[in-house]
Image (cartoon, rainbow, N blue to C red):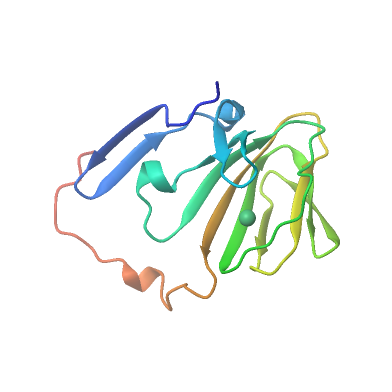
Length: 152
Ligand code: ZN
């Protein structure tokens, strides 16, 4: 039975915190894919347990020798694949892109994508989904300093 919730979770008025453990244990998580009608091992979406309101993030672990057997695109969502460990390849619109720890690949909604593990250890990665074109004009300017005690 694959894990369907964080190892630990806590929430306050303005935060939700969850523990998913180190990436080498993410193969213990699973996702019940509503369209494929089966459990996908090594994939878990964080939007629901964290209460994310503007993005979706998944943690992923693909075993050695495994390839995603289909291409997919999105209607509105841009995806960022950020690789944390292992080695693999992404295919986007018929082009192969080598990936390893530290590789980041942005794919526009219409990009036909798939990926595979070409290494000897699990390929671990995060996938961030946001609505394409939704980035605010400023990033740093959105932050404001708060007058209050820091606990350390
Ligand atoms: Zn996708």
